[in-house]
Amino acid sequence: MNSIYKYFADIFRGAKSLLIGMSVTGGYFFSPRAIVTQQYPENRKTLKMFDRFKGEVLMPHDTNNQHRCTGCGICEVNCPNGTIEVISDRIETPEGKKKRILDKHIYHLSMCSFCSLCIKTCPSDALEWGQIFEHAVFDRAKLTKILNKPGSSIIKDID
Image (cartoon, rainbow, N blue to C red; front, side, top):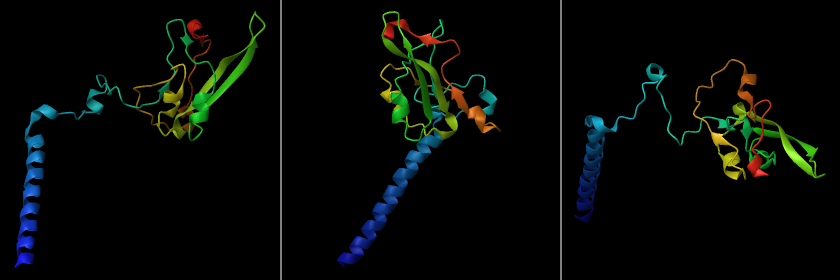
């Protein structure tokens, strides 16, 4: 008798769980308040991705073509699959000290796993996520990008 009671109790709990799940789904189906679907190719001009979106790694430059990257290479060391290459030079300052400057900051988008370790570990906050998401190309070489712009220099207040 006890096993029959358990059998019907399990059926009742299963049906109750099913009805609760269907009521939640039905609430979202009939409620117009939670529309988050983007009509992608049609709204391409006005499409804005969320702030947490990881599109590609960027190095922001100010209006004077200056960036915050010191060329330390910490982002390159922390990248798990070699997506980032930092090529730096050493120059001698007027005071006679040796100083490292950034020559090229190369980013291989085709190898990036979007783990954000490069951005999180950068001591000077020189990298950030961009909003660009259309990366379909026929030539893989177009996915290799140099993040520092030509003629750019480091912001003076970082020294």
